[in-house]
Image (cartoon, rainbow, N blue to C red):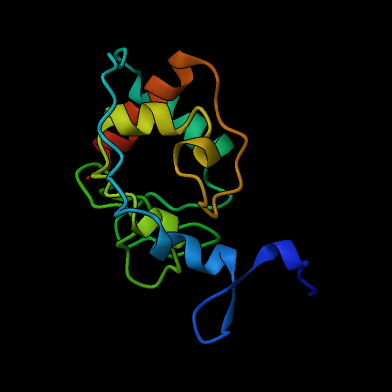
Length: 144
């Protein structure tokens, strides 16, 4: 893949490096993504289970001891540090997000994962309906 001259940065000593490789080290220390100040509506665990099967199970498992698929297993996600499941190759953005998963983080993340964690590898358009996100949060919280 060719890079345009605008995509390169020449460092002292003439060593060119691709800007997107340097951005994390050039930026000020990354602040963790703070827990959102939102009220998560009460969700329905049974509805959340159906939604998980329809929208999430293609890429994620949720049962205890579940396998890594295209995405990491989500058993016990609530209270877990983002980017820490053994055997899954997380993006640097996900590993460096500082998120400790909670219903508030998940509720907002599910609106638009790529906007919530810029640089995530998760390819998912998101869920706009608050009630569906609340149901998924209730279901995922129950899986621990």
